[in-house]
Image (cartoon, rainbow, N blue to C red; front, side, top):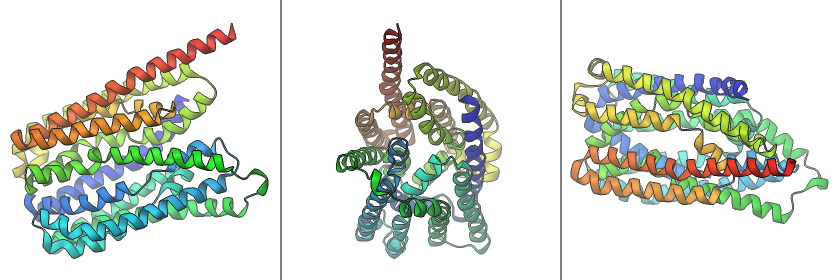
Length: 426
C-alpha cells in the first residue's frame, strides 16, 4: 500500500508543488505591483468570493467515493450529487450578489461593489463534487494535478501582465478568480464522459432504494456541514484579520499564509489519495496496516517539512526583500513561527482522512466547529490586543485542539477493532 500511496501522492505533489511555487511568485509579483495596502484590498475582495464559494461547495466527492464502493447504482449517486451541487450553487451566487455592497462598505471598499457582484459568478461555476469524486475513484490523479497547474500558470501570466501594464486592484481580483474557474472547467471536462456513460447505462435492476438515497444525502449533508465549519482555516481568518487589525495586515497575512503553505503542497495530496485507500483496508479489517501506514507517513512528512522551514528561516532577509518587499521584514518572526507551526500540522495530515474513514462524521463536525470557534474568537480577542501575534496564537490553539481530539480516538478504535478481530479468530 505504501508504494502505491507514494506513487499516487507523487503525481499530485508534482502538480500541487509546481502550482504552489507559481502562486508564490504570482503573489510576490502582485505585491510588488500594488504595494501592501492595495494588495490587502485584493486579498479581502477575493476572500469574500472564496468564503462564499466554500460555503456553497458541498465537497460531496467524499460521499461519491464512499458509496461508489458500496452501491451498484452509481448513476443515481451521480444524479443526487449533481442536484445538491446545483441547488447550493444557485443559492450561493444569489447571496454573494445581494451582500456584496454591505461587505465592501464594511472595509471602505464600496467602489468595488460591482466587481464583487460580477465575480460572484465563480460560485455558480465552482461545483466540483462529481468531477473530483469520479476522478479520485478512477485514480486519475494526473488530471487533478493538472488542474492546479493550469490555474497557476494562467494566473502567473496574468500577474506578469498586471505588473507590466500597471493594472489595479480590479484586474488582479478578476484574473485570479477567472484562472481558478478555468481549472474547474478542466476537471469537469475530463470527468464528463464517464459521468454521461454511467447515466446512460443505468439499469432498473440495481436502482438505489429510497432508504439508501436518504442515507447518502445525510452523509453528504454532514460532510457539507463539516466543510462549513472548516472555512475559518481556509479564508475567513483573512477577513477577520482585515476587520480586527487592518487592511494592510490582511495583505501581509495573505503573504504569510502563501509562504507557509508551500509545505502544505507536499502533504495535502495525501488527503486525496489516502482516504479511498484507507476505506479499502478498513473494509478488509486490516487495522494494523492502517495504523502502520499512518505512522510511517507522519514520519516521512515531518523531516522535509522542518527542513524547508529551517532553510527558509535562515535565508529570510534575502528572499523576502528580493521577491516581495522590504515592508515585510517587520513580520519576520511572525512568518517564521507560523511556518514552524504549519510544518508540524502538515506532517500530521494522515490523521484527518483516517478519522473520517473510520466513520466519525458527526464527531468530525463537532470537533471542526469547536476548534474553529476557538480560532475565530482567538483572532477577534487576541488580534485586537496583540495584532498578528494574537492571530498566530489562535491558529496554534486550533491546530493543537484538533489533533488532541482526533488522535487518541483513532488509536483507541484501531486497537479495539484489532483485539475484537483477534478474539473472533481464536
